[in-house]
Image 1: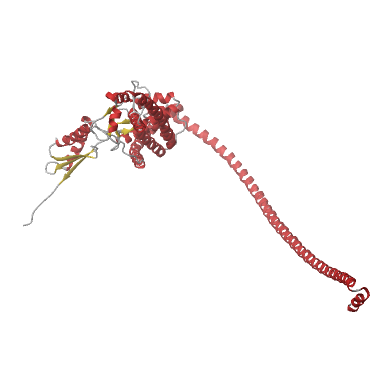
Image 2: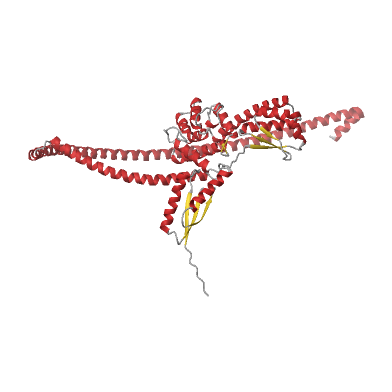
Length: 510
């Protein structure tokens, strides 16, 4: 190659010789690249062929393994089918054998039935013969003897039944009292309530005594306008930074309180503004009452109540009876009715509904001359409540006869809620007088040393002198005092009379 290059250079000169040399080198490089590509292609082809053979062998082995596995499963199924076929053949043979035994038993039974029928006919003939002979001897016909025997059996059965009825009745009374106490105690224990005491006055706090003059207004025109618009007596006295709102109706008292708050906050206090604020407050309070009724029904799980009844439930929030908030009382009665109905296996939802609505007659829009139980029953009937709920409302103070099991439950729960200690508030003077009367009644007996009325007058403990009162007389004294309390005094719930007799022997060692 070098000689060739030298000859070219000598023949063609330096420039042309360089071009020819470059072309020859490129041609040689091209042949080299082509040879390398062919070698690489051949190597790739061999590698691919080898991989294809390996994949083929692998797929072939997998296919053979799958075929063998399928053959094994088929063989297993075939063995299982053969075993089942053998079992079925054995069962068929067993059934055929039992059918033969049944046929044999049936045949024997038919023969025995025929023999029994023959013997029954013979016995009937003998019995008829004996009955005829007995009738001839006794002078009575068969019907007369039968009637006489039936009457004797009836008398005997009636006597036995009366004995059993008496025993069952006595047992039922004992169990009923026991179960009733148990249910009432469980109901009271499972309901947690608060002591709600309502007053006839509200105290409106103000920032300074300067506001009192603005509330009174020139010549008292503002306070007169406020009293006329709300129906509440407003007492402005020497109490620092406070105004007293007095009214028996909690709704009107609340309207006056909210109106005063808005007027004092706004700062504009004059008769026209007062009327405007009172009207807006009344509308807002009515909406709040309706919302309270809806929330109460949702909390208790009561649905489908008429909107008017729902509104009356909300009005209960602003009504009290002997200091006990009516809405709180009705919720308490509803929960206790549900618990008691569940214990007795009755409809819990109906009991809860009747408990919530039992005092609905205390919050009507008008005040007719009717007892609140009867009025509540009529309102419930008017707004589509069911007859059992209406009866429970009307009968919870015995104005009408009870016709459903829900009615006594509502009556009992109402009594429990109203009579529990702290539920209702009495006038202080009458409360103190009742406590003193209880103690004086016990002290009027000879031999009584001390008497204490405790638990808000629901228990009277009487301490007696052991020298004058024996154990037997202590029992008599407890009974006598309880009877006098029952006949001579008025009290909520019940009064427990406990007579305590203590014998003390004291000596001194000198």
